[in-house]
Every structure is written in C-alpha cells, then in structure tokens.
Length: 376
Image (tube, rainbow, N blue to C red; front, side, top):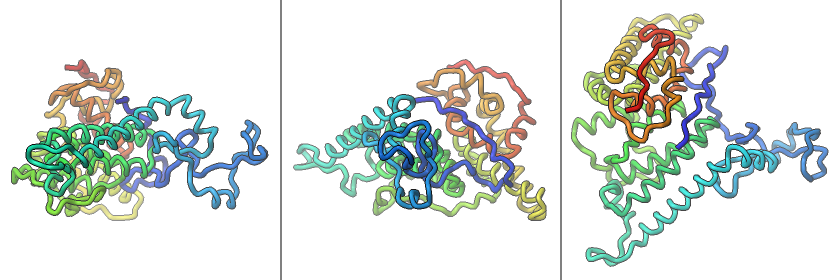
C-alpha cells in the first residue's frame, strides 16, 4: 500500500464554509484533469500532434459526455487515448495491475461463496443467504472475500486521495460499507478508517453519527447486524447526530480509546469553528455565545485528549516531515509513532485545509516541534 502524498492546498481566498472545496463533484482525466473526452482539431481523426488545439467547443462537449475508462482496471478515466498512454507509462501501470488483481480475486471469491461445495451440514452452501449476512468474518471461508474487498478499496483510496473526485471516494465508502454489512462486528477495523473517507466527501454529519453509533454498540455490547439485512451499497447507520452539540460524556470516553475517532471528531468540530469564525469576521452573522464557545471548548478538550493519548500525533500534524520520512509500519501500537503515522496518513490533509486549525495546534505544541519518530 503506497504512502499517501500530502498534496496540501489551502482553500484560497474564498470564504470558508466548513467543507473542502477541493473535492470535485465530477470525474476528470487522471492525466490532465480535463472533465470531458477531447477531440483534437487539426488531426483529421488521427493522432494528435503537440500543435493540435485541444479546446472543446460546446458541440464537442455535448457530444462527448463520457470519459474513456481504462478497459483493464475499470477505475481510471481519461479524456483521450494519448493521456491514457502517457499515464500508463508513468503512474497508472502498477495501480492498474493491483486494481485488476483485487477485482478478479473478489469476483472469484464471491462466485466460490455462492456455490460452495456440499458439507456435512448443507447440501449446497450459499454464504450469501440472509442468515449469514453480518457474520462473515466468523465464517472462516468468507475471509478471503473480505480481504479482497478491502484490498480493492485501499487501491481505489489512493487514487481518490490523489484525484479528489466524488465518484472515486463514493466507491471507497461503498466498498467499506459492504465489508461492514457482511461483517457487522468489524473484525477488520474498518470503523476506524471510514470516518475519514466520509470527511473526504464532506459528509461530516454521517461521520459524527457513525462514530456515535459505534459508541452505542459498545454501551450495549451488541454487535448484532440489523434485521433484515441492508441492501448492498446502502447507508445503514443512523443520521441523527447533531455536530454542533457539546460532546457527550460517554462519547468522550470512547474517543479517549481511539486516536482515529478523536481526530475525526476534531476535524468535524474545527470545520464548524472555521465556518462560524469566517462568517463572523465577514459580518454575515453575529457571534453566538451559545454555539461558538462550546465548539471551541470541545476542540480544546479533544486536543488535550489526543496529546495525552499519543504525544507524537499533534506535533506530526504541524511538522509531518520526520514521521512521514519513515516507512509505513506493518503494525501499530497505541500511543506510539506507528499509531500516529497510520492516523496521520488518513487525515493530515483535512487539518491543513481548515483555516487556523494548524495555528491552534501550534499554540499547544510549538511552530516547528521536534518529537521521537522512531517506529516501535
């Protein structure tokens, strides 16, 4: 799995509204970011030269509604055959191979589970029958299928991180939801990664509701899947959480046990603070003592909690270079640089794109903090 590039950019001069404006709603060419299939003029239908004009007329745009999709991986898209060739020579070759391998493995495993051989208990075992949905990891034969889904999701996640388009992030979220649908108790730890992918889609309420749902699961010690089983690809978690509410005491306890969840909720709170502070500065709203101060108090509480949980993480957010110079760890330990590395890999960009978020953290840990980045 590749290390995600920082590629950090500030939202620019536009007033911050509490979400990441770098997310593109539509797919674009992986090589040049063009949003339409391009028809070079002057090439007479043949190969385009460097002198050809690649500007599209309105008629050409209307006629070319779909980008060209890589026929092998079925994920990467391009505006032209030339862009596809250039990208395959550079970035896409290895990713294409991995995407195809995981996709083929997922299909083979799914077919095998649909038509498993007879056993002493079953004449013909279909693992996808309703009684098994939600309990996959406990059925040993299903683990290969779950791992194939996870592998495919990780490969698409890297592309989504670099391309920043909604269709790619939607694919990542749906694949992780499928793992949780089939394996409701989440033996694979997907629940600690999905909140960041929801944040990448600006789905802050879903992120917060998802984390609060798992807090309720822990309270009840209840990992039972919903009945009847949800359909493939659908969101089956509550959407009842209010991101403006002060952090409940029970949720704080759960956040103390998870650096990933604490970081995700901190992003949610800082986004709201950034949007409200920007609106107040621009004179669009009056400062509300019942909204902004509790959000700021929650943010400081989370910052202190994270610093206690992992003394490396906040320093690495401000000064990521030393930690990111290390190889990605195979395993991580709570409170150690390895844990900070894994969480930072999912959320560094989110923090750096929130106005004044890093400045708040610098007030705690310094402008260019040093820290122990030795992997355990």
